Image (cartoon, rainbow, N blue to C red; front, side):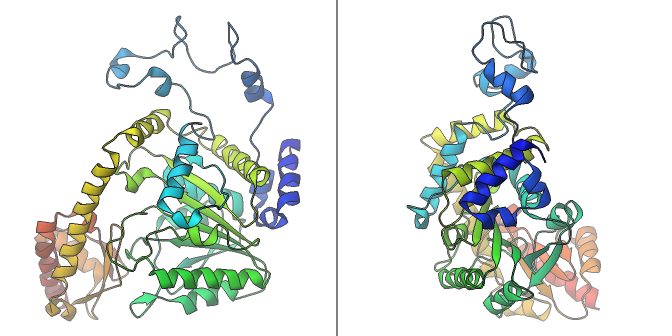
Length: 430
């Protein structure tokens, strides 16, 4: 093991040995190199002639660039063309942390790590898998989950999934979740909680969020060491009263010394910048302090450096410009209103009882998606193909559960979409 990794491990063990025990073998071995090329480059910062950086510089000291590209970007070249740090830009990290506190007032007074920038949330989940998942480790997930978890956590890190039933009638199945947490011997547990959920579009009520917190706390009090990965990809898109608008991370970040909450979030969906590929990983644990968090940040940045080097400097710069805009919040509110109008159109359309002949909606209240469960005798794949070929409607078939991304459907087209699905169901069933 590299001495720099050993140094970080000793620091983590001294501050919270549970966090050390949660680390995978990769997580224990990773470090951010302070020596070698990076260290020598840092030492040379500010020199008159600096021949350490693996980038090209113009004679005037600015980043070398093509005017064909630079002319299209109205930003200072220093925020566009050079590498960003593997930790992320030092100006966006505290800014995003500040925004986390503003969006989640329950975190007031809770000490968190400084977010580390990832290449959006897919990479964020992957880096969490790198740090915490060993081959054969069980990951507790809802039975409705984002399919890319398979590639990220199963294929890449060899984890195994332990699903719990997401729903009990029209709400969160706390009994199934608690059962999955407490099943098997006391020890290391990895949990993924994704709200609003992809694919179902469900977020817990305030009371359900408290029940989730209590279930995790009860399991921790039994001696389980729990890493909870909070996938907040669709954060902020809650459309009903009584639904928890704060991240489940805010319930867990100061819950127990045996619970490490890992917030994986970013502007991808929150700010409608899918192609920017900027995300963040933030850590929270009861008793967490700067030395512990600094060590976790270093390990995370080391994993990022060893994987992609760093996230886009340009994207981070553009986001900072947006966050500073006086119109930022009003523009977000306007887009939210469009999304809610589409949600309301879905809800209004499905109030018609006729659709229940062919499908029923799974619980939904937030996010981009909702799902319907097909009635018996209707083949989801046959339905999907017929919808494309005859009705020019595209949906996703998930084993006879149909996922509908109403985020991409104008409110005026929602009824036509469901009427098309209904008619196609009649045809498929015969």
